[in-house]
Image 1 (cartoon, rainbow, N blue to C red):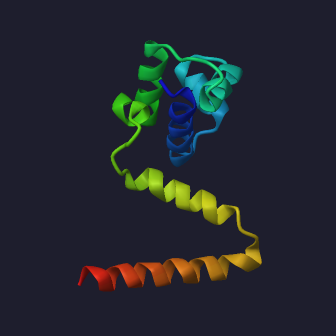
Image 2: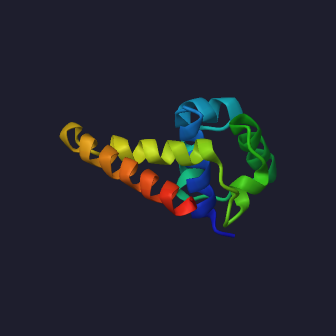
Length: 111
């Protein structure tokens, strides 16, 4: 089992829900340190903890365990937002222009 990948999926869903590690840990009933270790793959998580995390994130456990999760628009949107947040303010117009060009090119390809 790839605990790092599971942890990274949990992290992406957590961020998509707008939860901090502290918030999710509190809702699940575990320590913030344990949540951090789960997300970094430094600890194994029990089935009850996995089930509670999935419940709090409003996803199925399969979405957290699967190496190839089903596309989830909210998770992908959060990932795009995270990428955009990594740009400096003066770089954002260029990044948005690239995204618009990509969207337009893909729309033409679908036609």
